[in-house]
View 1 (tube, rainbow, N blue to C red):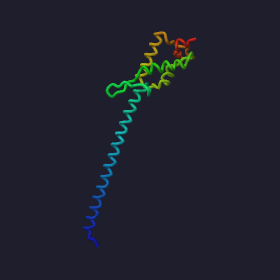
View 2 (spheres, helix red, strand yellow):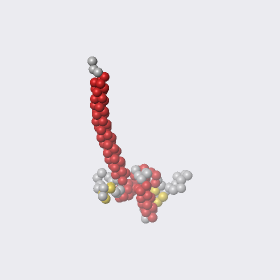
View 3 (cartoon, rainbow, N blue to C red):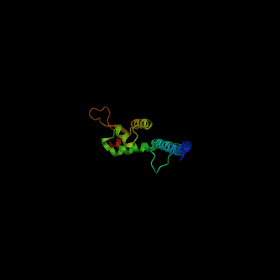
View 4 (spheres, one colour):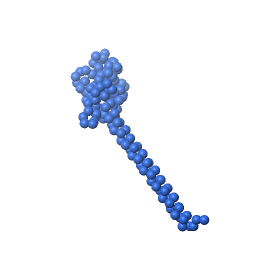
Length: 147
């Protein structure tokens, strides 16, 4: 029969081993948590680059300044022209252009679109069609499609 002192020594030894095992498991969990944080950082960075590179086709070359991708505005201009060509004489609204170009919410790209549309109007390449009832402005129509 073990005496009380031996029982306590064994209990202490067992608890110390349990503590050591749990600390080892905690270190493993902390390493996994750090990996998750690193992956989240990589995802955020990739999403940022994706948002900045919306107009870069897979077959075109992105211009890189440092490590920051820059939006290729020529693709935006090309997209506007394509959308207006497809719309024909009925034209296309600014809202539909934003959706077609997938730039809704990108304030920089939206601003550039507005500037580009104003430039096209000033150059006489684009006119505004008749507004729908309850609307102030009509859709954008290429001059060659205006009837």
